[in-house]
Image 1 (cartoon, rainbow, N blue to C red):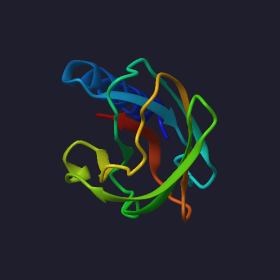
Image 2 (cartoon, rainbow, N blue to C red):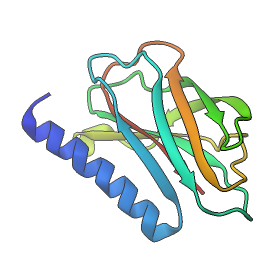
Image 3 (cartoon, rainbow, N blue to C red):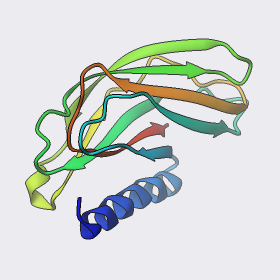
Length: 141
Protein backbone atom coordinates (compact mmCIF):
# COMPACT_ATOMS: atom_id res chain seq x y z
CA UNK A 1 0.00 0.00 0.00
CA UNK A 2 1.35 3.41 -0.91
CA UNK A 3 1.59 6.35 1.47
CA UNK A 4 -1.35 7.98 -0.32
CA UNK A 5 -3.49 4.87 0.18
CA UNK A 6 -2.55 4.81 3.88
CA UNK A 7 -3.66 8.43 4.18
CA UNK A 8 -6.96 7.67 2.43
CA UNK A 9 -7.54 4.66 4.71
CA UNK A 10 -6.71 6.69 7.83
CA UNK A 11 -8.99 9.51 6.67
CA UNK A 12 -11.79 7.04 6.06
CA UNK A 13 -11.39 5.62 9.57
CA UNK A 14 -11.45 9.12 11.00
CA UNK A 15 -14.54 9.97 8.97
CA UNK A 16 -16.21 6.79 10.24
CA UNK A 17 -15.48 7.75 13.82
CA UNK A 18 -16.55 11.38 13.37
CA UNK A 19 -19.73 10.39 11.56
CA UNK A 20 -20.53 8.19 14.52
CA UNK A 21 -20.12 11.09 16.91
CA UNK A 22 -22.45 13.31 14.91
CA UNK A 23 -25.18 10.75 14.20
CA UNK A 24 -25.49 9.27 17.69
CA UNK A 25 -23.68 6.13 16.57
CA UNK A 26 -20.33 5.44 18.19
CA UNK A 27 -17.52 3.43 16.63
CA UNK A 28 -14.22 1.80 17.51
CA UNK A 29 -11.78 1.10 14.66
CA UNK A 30 -8.55 -0.88 14.16
CA UNK A 31 -6.20 -1.34 11.19
CA UNK A 32 -5.57 -4.81 9.77
CA UNK A 33 -3.05 -6.21 7.30
CA UNK A 34 -4.23 -5.56 3.73
CA UNK A 35 -2.12 -8.53 2.57
CA UNK A 36 -4.60 -10.90 4.18
CA UNK A 37 -6.45 -10.42 7.45
CA UNK A 38 -6.72 -13.75 9.25
CA UNK A 39 -5.90 -13.23 12.95
CA UNK A 40 -8.31 -11.96 15.63
CA UNK A 41 -8.35 -8.19 16.11
CA UNK A 42 -9.06 -6.77 19.56
CA UNK A 43 -11.23 -3.70 19.99
CA UNK A 44 -12.19 -1.99 23.23
CA UNK A 45 -15.39 -0.05 23.69
CA UNK A 46 -16.13 2.13 26.72
CA UNK A 47 -19.87 2.08 27.25
CA UNK A 48 -20.82 5.05 29.40
CA UNK A 49 -24.59 4.44 29.18
CA UNK A 50 -25.80 2.19 31.99
CA UNK A 51 -29.50 2.45 31.06
CA UNK A 52 -29.90 1.82 27.31
CA UNK A 53 -28.96 -1.41 25.58
CA UNK A 54 -26.97 -1.06 22.35
CA UNK A 55 -26.41 -3.29 19.36
CA UNK A 56 -23.54 -3.02 16.91
CA UNK A 57 -22.56 -3.72 13.31
CA UNK A 58 -19.23 -4.79 11.87
CA UNK A 59 -17.87 -2.31 9.30
CA UNK A 60 -14.97 -3.02 6.91
CA UNK A 61 -12.97 -0.55 4.81
CA UNK A 62 -11.20 -2.21 1.89
CA UNK A 63 -9.37 -1.58 -1.36
CA UNK A 64 -11.29 -1.33 -4.60
CA UNK A 65 -9.63 -4.55 -5.71
CA UNK A 66 -10.92 -6.54 -2.73
CA UNK A 67 -13.83 -8.55 -4.02
CA UNK A 68 -13.96 -11.16 -1.30
CA UNK A 69 -14.90 -9.21 1.86
CA UNK A 70 -18.42 -10.58 1.83
CA UNK A 71 -18.66 -13.49 4.21
CA UNK A 72 -18.93 -14.46 7.85
CA UNK A 73 -16.99 -13.04 10.79
CA UNK A 74 -16.87 -14.24 14.39
CA UNK A 75 -17.31 -11.56 17.06
CA UNK A 76 -16.56 -12.47 20.66
CA UNK A 77 -17.32 -10.02 23.47
CA UNK A 78 -16.48 -9.88 27.14
CA UNK A 79 -18.62 -7.58 29.26
CA UNK A 80 -17.17 -5.36 32.01
CA UNK A 81 -18.30 -8.00 34.51
CA UNK A 82 -16.48 -10.78 32.60
CA UNK A 83 -19.49 -12.43 30.93
CA UNK A 84 -18.62 -13.76 27.46
CA UNK A 85 -20.86 -13.63 24.39
CA UNK A 86 -20.36 -14.47 20.73
CA UNK A 87 -22.10 -13.95 17.42
CA UNK A 88 -21.33 -14.67 13.76
CA UNK A 89 -22.05 -11.71 11.48
CA UNK A 90 -22.49 -11.76 7.71
CA UNK A 91 -20.95 -8.83 5.83
CA UNK A 92 -22.07 -7.52 2.45
CA UNK A 93 -20.76 -4.77 0.16
CA UNK A 94 -22.50 -1.39 0.54
CA UNK A 95 -21.48 0.49 -2.59
CA UNK A 96 -19.26 0.31 -5.65
CA UNK A 97 -15.64 0.46 -4.50
CA UNK A 98 -14.47 1.67 -7.92
CA UNK A 99 -16.18 5.01 -7.36
CA UNK A 100 -13.57 6.36 -4.94
CA UNK A 101 -10.94 3.61 -4.61
CA UNK A 102 -12.23 2.77 -1.14
CA UNK A 103 -14.87 0.16 -0.49
CA UNK A 104 -17.14 -0.15 2.47
CA UNK A 105 -19.03 -3.17 3.74
CA UNK A 106 -21.24 -3.71 6.79
CA UNK A 107 -22.98 -6.53 8.60
CA UNK A 108 -26.47 -6.76 9.92
CA UNK A 109 -26.86 -5.88 13.61
CA UNK A 110 -25.33 -8.25 16.15
CA UNK A 111 -27.47 -10.25 18.54
CA UNK A 112 -25.04 -9.34 21.35
CA UNK A 113 -26.64 -6.74 23.58
CA UNK A 114 -24.31 -4.13 25.07
CA UNK A 115 -25.96 -3.29 28.36
CA UNK A 116 -23.92 -2.15 31.31
CA UNK A 117 -21.43 0.62 31.78
CA UNK A 118 -17.72 -0.05 31.56
CA UNK A 119 -15.11 -1.33 29.13
CA UNK A 120 -16.18 -4.09 26.75
CA UNK A 121 -13.52 -6.19 25.02
CA UNK A 122 -14.20 -7.54 21.51
CA UNK A 123 -12.27 -9.94 19.28
CA UNK A 124 -13.22 -10.00 15.59
CA UNK A 125 -11.99 -12.90 13.45
CA UNK A 126 -12.71 -13.65 9.79
CA UNK A 127 -13.76 -17.25 9.21
CA UNK A 128 -11.37 -17.31 6.20
CA UNK A 129 -8.40 -15.08 5.25
CA UNK A 130 -9.56 -11.79 3.71
CA UNK A 131 -7.11 -9.83 1.51
CA UNK A 132 -7.54 -6.13 0.78
CA UNK A 133 -9.15 -5.03 4.07
CA UNK A 134 -7.51 -1.94 5.55
CA UNK A 135 -9.52 -1.47 8.73
CA UNK A 136 -12.40 -2.91 10.69
CA UNK A 137 -14.75 -1.21 13.07
CA UNK A 138 -17.67 -1.84 15.34
CA UNK A 139 -20.46 0.75 15.04
CA UNK A 140 -22.65 0.95 18.13
CA UNK A 141 -26.24 2.19 17.79
